Amino acid sequence: MGEEQHESNKDIALETESLSTLISTSPPEPKSSPVTTPPPEKENTPQSGDNAGLEIVVTEKRMALIKAWEENEKTRADNKAYTKISAIGAWENTKRAAIEADLKQIEEDIENEKAKQREKMKNKMAAIHKEAEEKRAAIIAKKGQDLIKVEEAAAKFHATGTLPSRLFKCFGF
Image (cartoon, rainbow, N blue to C red):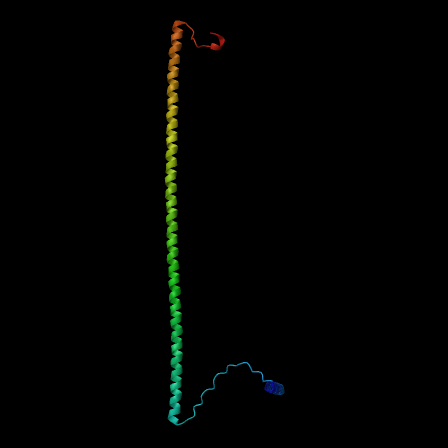
């Protein structure tokens, strides 16, 4: 039991010691936000006159090649986008032309159907007119026949002096 108290006393002493050091030390300095600064340019220290000039030329050549590559890639990307946009425009124009052709065909079909129906209606009207003329002619012919019969009957009654049997049935004759 004695050892356990001794160890717990040590633990307490260590904790108080660490707390006192934390309190006595000043808080850490706040970190500034990272600011991106360009890396400092290498100052070419002339090791020898020829090597320094050669290094500058090689560096400039490398930078020029990188810039040329960048411009080339940008141009390729622009050309690729232009080609795709042109292809989409051509596709749109083709589809639009096909739809307009279909619409024109539909309109022509409608006009043809309209003309056919108009012709059918004209034929029906002509047939009705013809039938009406035939009926009129039949009625006129029947009227003529009836008039001839009446004239013949009247001539007979005049010749015989008799009265027709159907004459004035309502009066009893």
